[in-house]
Length: 471
Image 1: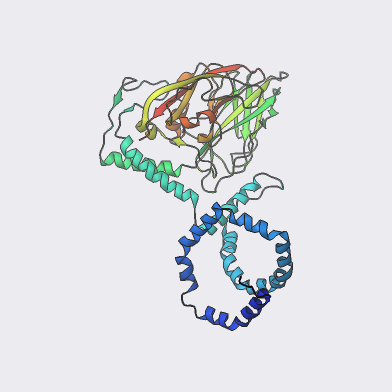
Image 2: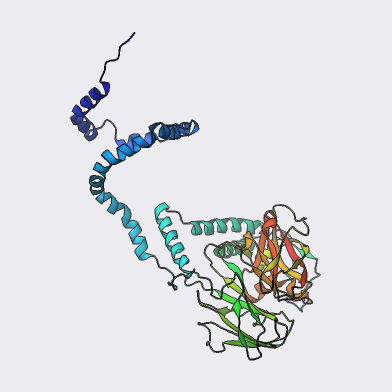
């Protein structure tokens, strides 16, 4: 039988070391360039890796080597080569890190808050996003905007040619045609241009968001008592990119005795009174002039005061409806009246009851499909408003399609002329995309809540929805 000569390993080491000059000559003048050969072998490399993953070669190799081999090599040749290797790589390090240093120096960060302020996390998010873009060359938001623009333009061209319903009129007026009559939408170049424009507007607003902020006070004195934001809400305006500032669309109150209230913010008219008004008991109606929003500054704090009857245990509520033209990290789905017109198919309502479990807290959450589960599958629906059967501070809709922020409807029974078309009404008045839409695939994750006082009255409701065409 064949005989293997001894000392094979030492002979291999000696002869390989003797070939150092040949190694250097080969590297200096290869038959094919390293780059060309490596790129050409990309598919073979990928196939070999996939095959090795299938048979678990990596884990088997590590287990076979064990910690002893790793430790010996790291402490021996690894330690010897660590310092010289770092020195040899100085040029590569400087070249590789320079573009990230440029990004750090040229990225504009939002203002720094006090130590421990959660708004400081926004600074980290802005920097992390800028560095990630520099590394990958992938800008998510512009790509989403472009995709939205193209999709919405194509959808708009075809949707505007379909039959649609008349847009409801402002509360208190009559429709110019019978309520259920549907009219054909004209086609042509004009409609196409309108559709493209609507798509562009919708794409630019794809990071817009509606938000709810509620303040409460217990046993407010007649002369006024400071209010505080309820659990989960913040008195501070959310941080947004400069130049695309948020606004307060309106506000409404749920109180048990009549009195006065006021709210101020640093960028407002003044910090003594700013907006001061009167409130009546059990009258949850918008308190600002429709159509004119109050401009806000990112991160500024809103302060609120309310005067009432000083009744022990009475909780009084003040709810603000905020709109953010751009809120990074939030992809709420909001449409305007033109898109509602072009995509409207038919009405549908979802009836249920929400009962708060704690005063001055959003509670009583009911999933959209908890009371009934009849919505057409995989279909978009617009939230127009609600019929509200019990008084509360606000009835809110929250889910993935709203960016997990609450979209509020004033909790006023007896005013279905307003609350049943609350979001189209806001669109009419402000000219903004303020109608939340959702897909029925998300129905189990869409929640209706209410916020109310200590009486915890059950609030029956019928959510008024519009089924939308998907093309």
